[in-house]
Amino acid sequence: MCGRFVLIPSLRAMQNMFGYRIDDRYPERLLDFGQRYNIAPTQPITAVDAGLDGVRYVRLVRWGLIPGWTKDAKTQSLLFNARSETAADKPSFRTAMRHRRSLVPASGFYEWRRMGAVKMPYYIRPRDGSTMAFAGLTETWLGPDGSEIDTGTILTTSANRLMAALHDRMPVILDAKDWDEWLDCGNRRPRDVAHLLRPAADDLLEAIPVSERVNSVASDDEALIAPLTEPLVADAESAPQKADSAPDDEPPAQGSLF
Image (cartoon, rainbow, N blue to C red; front, side, top):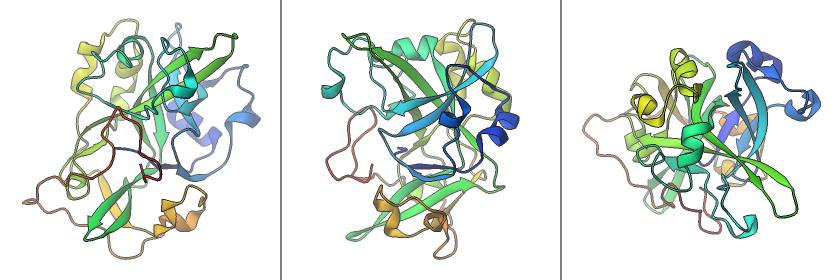
């Protein structure tokens, strides 16, 4: 799962990393919304995609994909994650998987570990402090009144060894060398990029215990990612922990952390 994440770099810093252009339709003042430490579904997220000219562009989308065939957006389930193994076949995602693949920049994400009756939040980030790119999909929903909503989702895959101690799923994190291949919807069909949708290397990430303040979407400050104790050490013998949250492709229950 990936139900909360963090994005710290500025718009211009990310421009250097991802090499995108800023479209005239998206004024910079709207795109550069500062450091965010607790991004949640329904909030705006940054999506990087490639236009017909192959040039990368950046825009904001609502986190929670609305399929184009949806009649009423208000009744649509909150599709903030999509299982990478089935996205190419599911009606909700297959068109976006074929034509609208994107990168979702992130500094890290949160996951919860059940410890008895308590869920302990962890902040998962690259060990080297770099910015990641999740594999994403976007869709523009057209309302009956002519209104448009740009929406998006984050693809997930099975957990690597570190994440298995927390959850049996994790977001797909794309290597920088694979970004062009993933974004090339003109020449590469979903089956051609399926090999990119794999768990991250076991040594890429670290999981840091953090404050339970992150449970509230109203909390959004740097203190949320301050370590409480030493990072989690993965147990090679432990089985993936099945979290009792909503599965991918389904909406979260009212009050759920995810």
